[in-house]
Amino acid sequence: MVHIDEKLEPILAEVLRRNAGEEEFHQAVKEVLESLGRVVAKHPRYANHALIERLCEPERQIIFRVPWVDDAGQVRINRGFRVQFNSALGPYKGGLRFHPSVNVGIIKFLGFEQTFKNALTGMPIGGGKGGSDFNPRDRSEGEIMRFCQSFMTELHRHLGEYIDVPAGDIGVGGREIGFMFGQYKRLTNRYEAGVLTGKGLVYGGSRARTEATGYGATYFVQSMLATKDQSFDGKRVVVSGSGNVAIYAMEKVAEFGGKVVACSDSNGYVIDEQGIDLDLVKEIKEIRRERIVEYARLKGSGVHYIKGGSVWDVACEVAIPSATQNELSGNDARTLVRNGVVAVGEGANMPCTPEAVRIFREAGVLFGPGKAANAGGVATSALEMQQNASRDSWTFEQTETRLANIMRDIHDRCAETASDYGAPGDYVLGANIASFVRVAEAMEALGVI
Ligand code: NDP
Image (cartoon, rainbow, N blue to C red):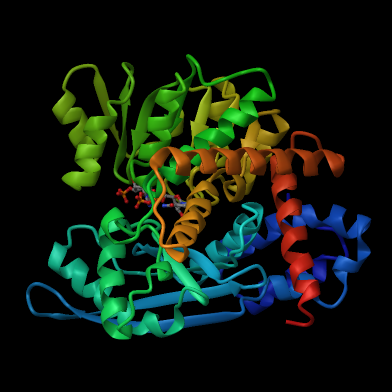
């Protein structure tokens, strides 16, 4: 059960009333409010001037029609969203998600989380998120391009390098960012490289951006393990998903000496006791754009493919959920604890249900919440903006070193904050409080906004 301080209860009640039916948004707000009781007890001024209420209300929400023509010449309609959540620290920043499950509640939860995550990076970026209920699966390249162009035809009027800077998320990778940047450039007649991040290297992208979220999550887990004098070396690891975040988490885990034995997609999961062959996953997912079942087919003996089911049934010492929200349930958490998991780092946004998080915390499992553990992606997006602004391009090593330092700082800030507030080792509390204080201080300084 979630425990909310009585001073904050009316705020939650109002969020639930005003955003009826938006369950993921409720879940994200509850989780943050649960941590803030200790802050308002220590600094009562944060409960004044409707500061927390304002933080729970997006600055702007844009919903629009996206008409496009499929390969058969039929007109299709999707719905586009951009929630500009909070710009106290800088221009709105956060990815675009193309997935049939997208609705305003999901985009709002992601935008809310993004505001705190971006604050944790220490960089000058506000929070936003967007996307569409468009399903890119089985769509031709031409259809994807026409969809992206139509989506940007409306969205472009709300963007700008000093206004709002989107990036990728589920269903939006380098290809889609390229199509959207091309359309933005046509519509505005400006080569405004800093308006989107996750761009290709030939037109203003940053080295290490593609790798950043997965690498960053792995760095974060490495720092958590180090607090217990442990490392990835020789550990069994399970990573869910097989998209951008999952692939580069698996790559870094292997570099750190861990062995990833299973990964998944929304149809099922593969177990390879020899260690997942990442070149093959990249070929299947990044080049051929096929299902993970292909991995088992191409590898043959020694690899098991399980259709449906839960990848968390596979025993491991470290789990990095990197697919989507609420993909790891309370039952999954119990199974993981029973199988001896020592650390969980959320590569995805809110992949663990509240019950799962509670079980990990009670069992003393090191638990890195998404807003801290997966902040490496947006941090490197901010580095991309820096390179664009200075017309510079850094080496991979330079960029990765910055990323590694940022992740270490985030880890240490969360750990120190948790200790300061009487809960050593509680990264959920540490991340929520450290990020809240930064956004709240900026909002206080800017008057009633
Ligand atoms: P991708 O689209 O590259 O990959 C998503 C992966 O998760 C795919 O393997 C996909 O399988 C699986 N997946 C998606 N939805 C579901 C579902 N409903 N059930 C089961 N599996 C699912 O996305 P990303 O890797 O970019 O994003 C993954 C997560 O990380 C998201 O939560 C995102 O918000 C978060 N994140 C991403 C960042 C980034 O820089 N990309 C930054 C910070 C967080 P399938 O192909 O079958 O759909």
